[in-house]
Length: 90
Image 1 (cartoon, rainbow, N blue to C red):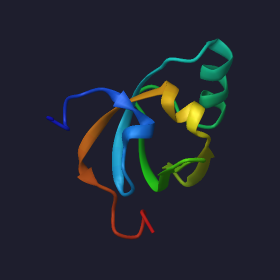
Image 2 (tube, rainbow, N blue to C red):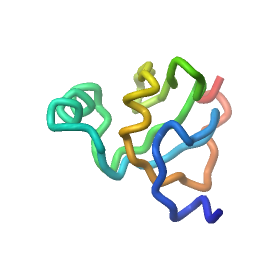
Image 3 (tube, rainbow, N blue to C red):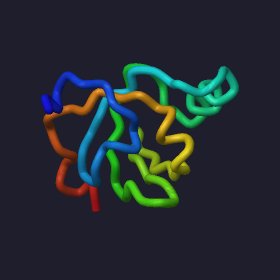
C-alpha cells in the first residue's frame, strides 16, 4: 500500500498519523457540521487518540475534536508521510 497517495476514510488513519481532508461522503448537513468544526477540504489533521470502537480524537489547528465512528467513516483523507509532531500526538 502506497500510503502517500491513497484516499482512505479517517477511520483508517492510525494514532499519531496526519492526513489532509479530501472530501466527505455524508450529506450536506454532515459536511456543514464538519466545516463548523474546522474540518474542511484541504485542511491537515492529526489523530491524537484512536481510532477505536467509539471513535477518534483529531487535532485540527489548535483544537482537539472527538468524532464518532460513523463520522470518521464518512471523511475521506489522504494520509501524509510525516507523523504528528512529538508534543501533538500525546
